[in-house]
Image (cartoon, rainbow, N blue to C red; front, top):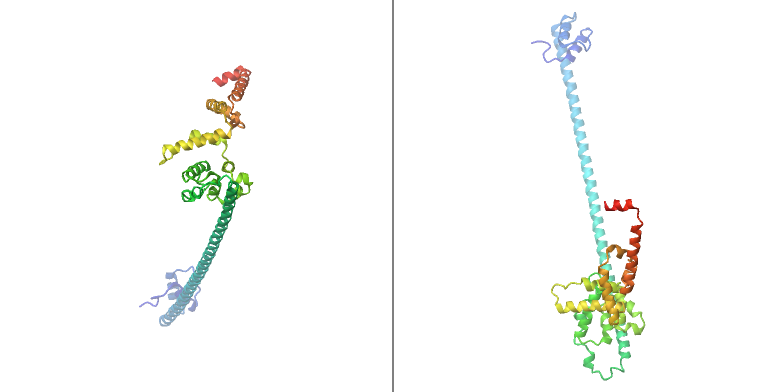
Length: 347
């Protein structure tokens, strides 16, 4: 068996140096073997023992290095696991705190919501109480002002057949049209045989608190007069005669409504339009209708020119005078344009 069995280049280099030979890393394995065998100090038995010792020492060093490497790997893995566990604990702690914060926010929100609900109920109760005071005060003034004229009215006639708040929902400006709402109120009030001088009292209970307060601040002669209250409401919700004119011409019959109701609504819109522009005679009414018919034939460009007072032009004589002046001015302007410009427009 060769003395070099199991030996590596590093082992042969050490053995060669032990034999007194000069070698370096550039020597190859077969060259090292030749140098060892040719050495003067070479003795096979001695060289074999040295070779075994060198190989065993190298293996021992390798085993130590491997154990150290495995220990380092194990320590690194243990450290990595500890870091993972620490991050996990930190994450769980953070999530626990976040859950606690969310739960606390929800608890505070629920407390705030209950507080708001309580405040809202309290506010509504106070508003209802104030509104009831207003209604009672208005009703008292109305009854006192009419006590002499109503001395012979039977008590069964004063009390309506039905309470109107059972027939109508409260007015909501986001959902209801005030003009149609008042039309419905008037019809139901008549059907319930409510005395007209108490209409305001019944209407106040159907209006928002701020609007009822607005009416209550008016003098008695206005606050107790349904016609005056109606004007206040129409003005409050910006319903002008022009708006009623548009409603009259554009209003459609609602699905499920009767033609009788539709006719009543149109008549109400028409009356509000006519009364709003004070067309209180046949001649003024005739002028109003003729003017409206003329307006329908006018181009949008001309309407825009008179936009600031278009809705106030209710006399056909005034309207046609302005329209003729406008046509004359436009015709004069066109005639003064350069010929080349007119040709360009035609092209």
